[in-house]
Image (cartoon, rainbow, N blue to C red; front, side, top):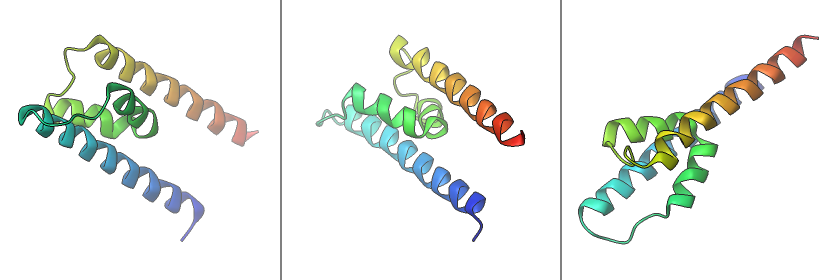
Length: 92
């Protein structure tokens, strides 16, 4: 397997796991059980931003919290900018 395919596979797996974490926290919120901390959810967003944003949208979870509806898109913008810089640097 090429390194690029491996990186994409790992990225997809991490985002799927983050999506599941957001779903689990929403389920726990509905059943009044122990919750995953907001800090942990934000760090999950750093690791898997696509999964976090998808989890917010699909499960309608944390959509009213500014930390999430502002913070996660900012994380996406930062990660996109970093990826662009890395990609452009590789072209030189």
